Image (tube, rainbow, N blue to C red; front, side, top):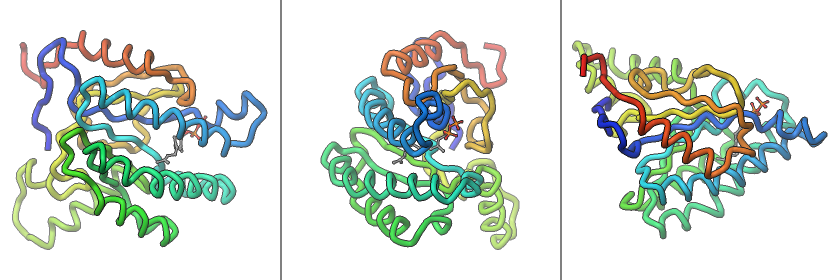
Length: 235
Ligand code: FPP
């Protein structure tokens, strides 16, 4: 839960969350279908994940599909589902070999059954996390996550501490993000990790996600390093 990580200036963030926005606009600019933008986004995502762990980031959380995104046209969703099938079938073993633990947060019952099964299997293969933890938010919405936690809590019937409540969220056991990056020019959280981002440093980039390079990621890390985190204290 929300233990302040990396509170000192100049430190690499322990946990980075990324809203990978702009795939559709990237494709539109090239007169390509939106699915081509998502494929370009997936390629970019693979490179950035490698780069992030090599830079010393320990936990990387990627917003791959929100609960609200399920209202998108069928064709676009089918394209994204194909990418999920491809990604998890090709990468679960590789991540385990590298010592990277895999975790998926969100409501997987929204997904076609075969993908939900593939994700569950992929998570089972997951390594101990000695080289990092890669978290995908799929079918994820922060308000829905909070309600799921509240519904789990009420059956317990006693007042909870902040820590006990955090342990009921999808992100149980993970520290809060230190840095949240959103690409694609929009400056909003879009129902992502609302509880966990109470003291997260925010970084917005105009770059569309498929164009967001390793250098851009480094710029975000450098911006983070120059911030002074006070968590409501004076110093
Ligand atoms: C938001 O851009 C992006 C998404 C809804 C999908 C993100 C998915 C990937 C980067 C690749 C697949 C991921 C995995 C785990 C294999 P948008 O389409 O809303 O862009 P726009 O704002 O330009 O329309």
